[in-house]
Image 1 (cartoon, helix red, strand yellow):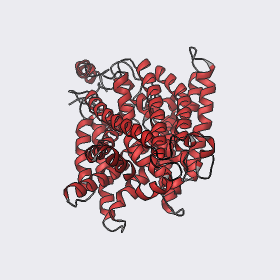
Image 2 (cartoon, helix red, strand yellow; image 1 turned 30 degrees about the vertical axis):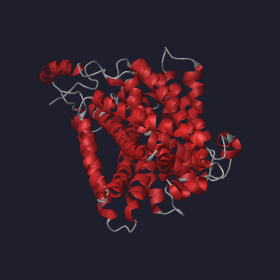
Image 3 (tube, one colour; image 1 turned 90 degrees about the vertical axis):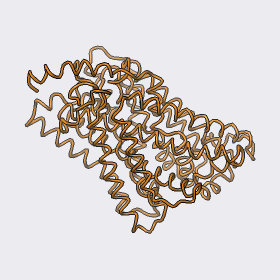
Length: 503
């Protein structure tokens, strides 16, 4: 960019600065929790895990996963105080391990977050189409509400981030209310009494434990996204860390208690058989029976809004990764453009919307001849992409654990040994183990009776582009060093989110 360009952009950067630093700890925490979609996890994730694994120790697995992710957050949150970059995983790995690996990590992050976001459209479309059919007697294709939702999500994506935060805050608040009511009634109505069996190690240390952890980690995905919004946080050195710790604690405890309540709602001895028969309808049938059909209908509606909140949150994460990579010329620089009126990365938002439209369109066409009936979007789009995305994010978190050690090993001012060495080592071992469990149980996660080509193609779709990204980083080092040296580096004044090129 020449001198003239800088002179022209400067007033716009000053204007855009008004739109930055909008997010405090509560708003950021809500955005993080929204990505994890609490009601979706309870109605869809917990029921699926119980049905597939027949492990009643699911509540304990959530507590252990929260502990592991809490240990991971020690180093991760410490890095957030030193590195403020919208491409969080990318920047951390680039500065803590190597720039080429950082480029590879950025591609894995883009594929994974897109997978999580677009996969959720499968569940959203199926749920809305089913509700419309049940309540209004109208048979609509699953993809019609999806395309409408993509438009709304895209509209929020190009507007101010605090608008998304307010919308998500309201939706997540209602989710918590309905699930807390469910938990209270479930504990009160437990036919076998209050049993602590689901919290005992003997209930978890059985066949299927590996698959239970593999399923469970997907429920937490999104908690790590706080660092992505560092450039838009009021005090990134404190806000990101506090939001991350708060989200892990709330999500872990919330999931464990709610999964325990679900187990007690029919009794530990019957829960597996019942959930295998009813699936996600278990919670809504229970609410309708014990709290009335009106509350049951509200719960079903909140299930839809839970999915919507998660879609918005993951969309924003993808848009900011595009922005970060465009700003540093790893991807086309056009992706670094931000909207003057809101400071949002609108080209990154458009890019994510276009990818979602393309992928959903492909699945809509494929679904017409699949023979899977109405469950097609759940069994394919949702199941395939969200599991592949979760696998990629777990891999990135394991790499970030190593990056924490590498980064602080080069700093003069650094935190204590627990933060920069011991906690990262423990989290690398835990997350590396979970990554292996996901790979070895991938056919189980896809509800396959035996492995087939899809079992291997989906992980490859996440990992292979990352390997290509590493080679791309090596190419930049040799041939475009002016780009290579700024990979993953802390942006200078006026180059953070909300500045640059506008319309």
